[in-house]
Length: 90
Image (cartoon, helix red, strand yellow):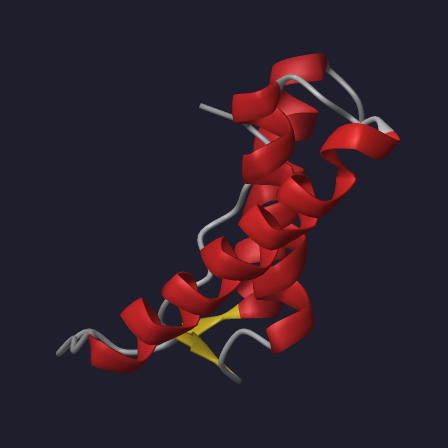
């Protein structure tokens, strides 16, 4: 799937509506092949984004976990370290 879509569940603080909406846009862009839809498809595209965001929010509200919430800064630092190792940058 799309490498830019990041895990949003079980973070402290929880994912914001803006983060969920951004992930929904990335998902719909990926499956449609449109970065920006034509005027003819704009309403359908935006409707799909809003539906995916709503369903994602409902999913997160219904899910339960016994795992400790992840820390955003720690996850970001690990990603930077993986990237540095993979691409040989500091």
